[in-house]
Length: 309
Ligand code: SF4
Image (cartoon, rainbow, N blue to C red):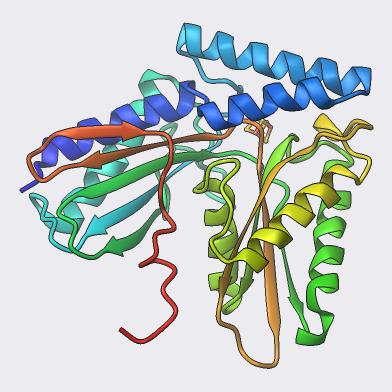
């Protein structure tokens, strides 16, 4: 039985790690992009991003003054049990977000959408959000904390099936044009694309694709993997470099996830995950030990399953 106290302390530590330690896949990629960029101004900006990551890690401080929106993804093993059940789990996650906001500190970004009322703790109605998936035969619980930045850079479009890959590329470039030109999603970004499902499923998958796969990860379906690579190339040929400047290094990676759709449509959702990719994962074992890691491993074979069991 996984204890209530451990859920809280693990979730708190996750928030600290997410806020102050940039994942190594992201740091390596930005370092490589700084070397590849030939335009002096975006190259200078990229080098400063790397320096900024190092200062944040050394001083254990957030890497951006906008500390994003804390949220959680929970993968719950089918054989796992925790003290107090799901209600206690969610209480622990909300309490950890509140304490982390105070201690790190995080900017209290969450406000009432109309009155702008702010409890100064990043907790409120439907905040922080908690999304769930499940894993067969596992007796552990995994929690991923993401402090999502890139407020701008998300869009949705219902395409017709006949629009095909060309329609997806057009939408992809439209979103780049709309948000990169003012540096609005703080490039370089990882771009998540949800294709198919219903509108809500496609938007959810696009967000997860952006936030929960590490840079360099390719989809197991070779056709989707090839499209991911084409879109990286296309994005970096768009004329945009870091922070909306003229250059060639604005897209760290593209991750695509698909869901079966209505035969008459092809919904597509796009999300940009900004250069401050704050994510951290912990596996809480049934014996109450912890394993922290950088890769969320969210998209398991079971999560992507296609057929009747
Ligand atoms: S988009 Fe990311 S890097 Fe830009 S201000 Fe927001 S959190 Fe910071």
